[in-house]
Length: 523
Image (cartoon, rainbow, N blue to C red):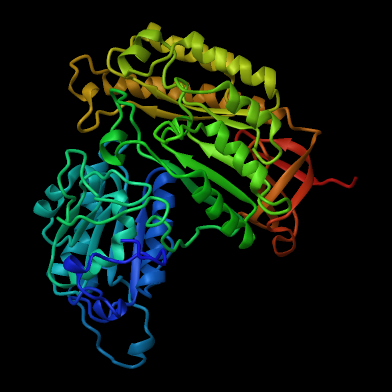
């Protein structure tokens, strides 16, 4: 709940008074110090993991065991005990006290990958190792209590909407609870009962006030010091026949423009130079609000209210062609802080396949969007997503996808072979495309996408472009890495300590498929 001072607190009837978080983290792990998080999936999951880490460190005082994902754990730990107590207090263990898997369910075999990842850790727990196991993200939301039945060693199944209460829920786990927090939520701008979509109390059985602009502002451990993710709308109201997102991310719920600006101002004060606005269907921003807002309104609002010489680049993902607005094209073309980059998934080129997908547009209407972009922002990059081998896709229908690609020539294209997902209509259709046909089509799409990407890179050769330096080139310590306003990665010689976070004018001397090579411009 939000108290009179605007602070987040816990419903005391359920959780009791908690004067000391750290002393009450999971009594089965009384001296918990280290956590490990493994993240899979899209930018939304990455942003969620940053919030999860913020809660674990900012509220519970834990330390990350290892920011990098480990391929495996030491199986000998299941039976091995420490033979020496020397320096025991300062020794960092090879396994965490709290394991959190932030999962994705978009791709095939997602659930099995989670089960495989859980296996070694559940074995550790059965062998007596004090360990709290949390499964979060979309597989958690999809599977719910079934995960607890399959893996009794799991302590908490956490849907994305419950991240702000992770610290509180871990304390509940510490009292011996095993929780599946996956009931859908309807947020209220001014607070009110938190209920599931059918009006029942949420998973923990409590009625608590929740404000998406207040309670969601938990501590965040950002994954980068120059660029940051900022959620602007959660959920999706579309029901594409192949997509599991609406069932795991819930209905569309927009954050207020004021709350989004406040988060961006905090980032600006911390020295960030770029933000990427996140939404499963970002063009739907504001249509659930009163008064109604639009995504173009948000872009103008941020561009006008962010101080100059702070955040200079605003990006966003992901658009839906059905709702794409001419006003967004105008904003990208005209607003100084909004980058000239469009991500507009087309998914398929055949109109019948698009109807079967329930996408709500055609080949021609999609191309009309592209023509408007080219006319208004001719130097903008255009990126997209495509699915091949959707049920019922013939070779002729697939050819229309190749035709669309040839007409657009995407700067970057995310390519996927269709895979049946739980709780989606297309998964039950009988006209599934054989895997070998899917594989062949995927290879053809990827080859053509790479050809077009190189062509789009080649247009930069000889030009001087503005590059925001992000990091050192991991393959060459004498080089730095940054991106153009259009999102193309650029490598050039430079001192990362001197240039990180700076915008540098770079002359492009070489084009690669997915990146560019340059040198600092002399004039």
